[in-house]
Amino acid sequence: MNSITEIWAKSKGTFDSKSLSQILAFAGDGKLKDNNVTSREFRDLLDQVPSSLLKQFADNCLTDGFSDSGLALQDIINQIGTRLGFTIEHGLYRGKQNDIGFDGIWTSTEGHSLVLEVKTTDAYRINLDTIAEYRKKLIEQNRISKTQSSILIVVGRQDTGDLEAQIRGSQHAWDIRLLSTDSLLKLLSLKETLNDTKTIQQINELLKPREYTRIDKLIELIFLTSKDLQLAEQTDEDIEEREELPTEKKKRKSSDDKATPVNFHEQCLTRITAKLNINFIKQTRISYTNKDKTTGLICAISKPHKQGQHEKFWFAFHPHQNDFLKTLDNAYVAFGCGSPDKLFLIPYKEFEPLVKNFWTTENEDRMYWHVVIHNRDNKYLLAQPQIEKGSMVDITKYKV
Image (cartoon, rainbow, N blue to C red; front, side, top):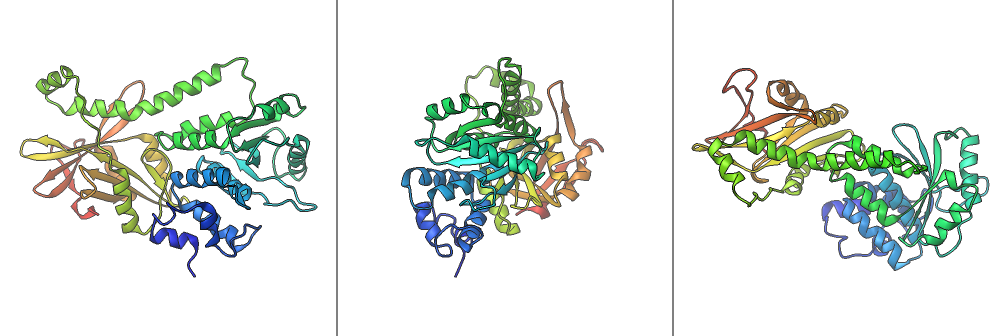
């Protein structure tokens, strides 16, 4: 019998019209228990699906109220933590004598640990002393640090007024952060629109307890996020300015119309997945990795630009993308030239030596390389202008 992950992999639309309780019924005995088949299959499925399906599953947990909804939500929240860049240790579904009853431990790259508590509702008072005791016991067992740990409570809905008051009035107020499932999903959605993973690491700092009488750090965070989100748009404008003739620049500046941006990343990713037989999870706006983060890629796209009788395609390649690819055992760069049918998948180890030969743009805000691909009579040529004018490398063989 196929696992639910295999069912999903064979037909990715299979679960779109099914509730989470129906999906779980296909796994093992259909009941979530610690270390059983259903649990392992469900967590493996969560490792594979896109964030849109995570949101659908979370909504099911909060609206359908099936028997294991709270346990399923615990796994979903831990999966979101993984995608936000934390190292996750799953807790138990149900507390056992002599075991610590946390729902998860999220450890950041800087070494701070969040002891997780997940609640589908705040209709009932939470025993904060019990959660604080979990953290205390983990500290005593040297599993987390006292100075580098705190508690994160994730609840199922936005209306958390009573629980907020309960936390503020407790002795544990300075050790606890509280947010809704919806806000956590929005944080994940934001991450997937960003360009640099370092930005989301800064945003993750919000999950630590902080005293915000002085709000400099919040303002800095808003500034960094805004700057990151503007990066792609500003880069595209730079590229347009660089490639156009002076008369074309004047014409464009005098027009209120803006060119419609191309967007076919997902179609490109589908082709790459089929080519490599690897399921990729979105990390940032155009970066992806497999479940184990051993294989990954940058997938950039460009509209065609006329150059006489021929066409060319212009991409930006940033230092943070270069750094990302260097961390992976197997890495690729992919360039969609006008459509998913003109897609080139190049192993990073073969692409990296060519980077030094690209044009660059440098200013006080950023630096990036210009990747220019020319289509000459159905041959695709990668420009290497730093070697000499007109120098190119034939990349036609990499077409997917």
